[in-house]
Length: 314
Image: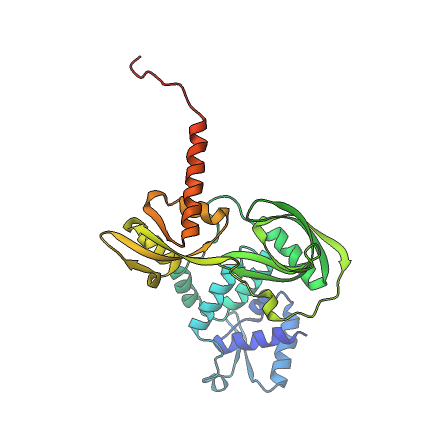
């Protein structure tokens, strides 16, 4: 008899007027006989349960006992559902769907319809397929069983290396999943982005967890600096969303000054260059000079290849 199931039944009965035993059995994936034993245990614990016979019967907690005893408000349940749905795209569908079904049972059908009509969560990527479910499950099992993992990792410079790690934690940050663990090659703790991991292989080698503090696993913004950009008004909404409205200030004419968080790597410079002539880096000087260098290199690349002139009059 699971304590968590008993608590869940009590929570559900506090929120609902009446629930059938068959509904409870289906929700918790047990037999009706098990539910009857659970109800007896709840009664013995001092929580009065009333049974209603018939087709529309069921069980409920005595109304006098339920007054001001509800554990969750509709807002609380909504917050729980938003959180559960937000990670459903990565975690085991069976595991999360069962949990979501139980949480949904804490509110009425009418309230549930209101929630579903007002909020929709879709984590399907616009481009490509970033499905990390298979790797996610294997990583989660390795963390639980304290087994080593090996995989190929592609860093931000597209350099691929073979890694062997002690996995410790999975982190969801800014819509991306990360694996944190102790890397044998680097002899230090590292954070790996799941979308850059390939050829994952759980190893049949156990490890003894190391003594670690929370500071070792902080998601540090590595090599991030703040640069000043001068942007066209056409980029205002994007920059306000990305950097925060407080970091976008009006300038002369239709221009704006932006305090922009920037990582000094190929991805960061490529991101800035993608804005074209709608964006100019004002400072620091070394970032501006590096952009000029990359622009000149790009121009040289295009100048190397020439094409014969086409006579359009023919």
